[in-house]
Image (cartoon, rainbow, N blue to C red; front, side, top):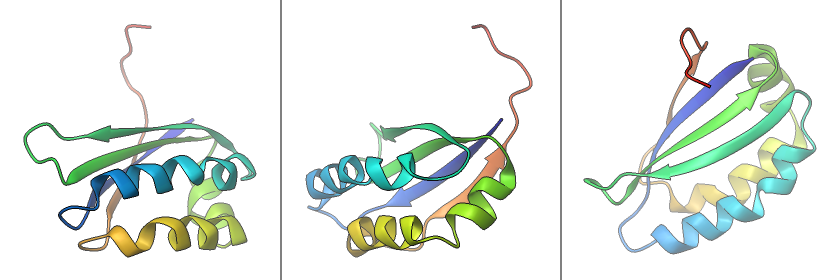
Length: 99
């Protein structure tokens, strides 16, 4: 299992609309191969900055399967208008957990 971490800065004043759009995108993610859930976190210090944490079975489930799908096009269609800049995306493996 890998975690995609996307840092997303949104245009000032669009925070609530962006959050609503991410909630609508739940279905697009849910139809995607290898998807295991996501969380959206909002920065306290920088309220226009978010981190989207998405769990995927494999790296390729995100980089190939999702990115090449209509589900990705739906996702970007819902949220892309709110981006202040392209998201910064990285992938991680869990190495220590308390759960």
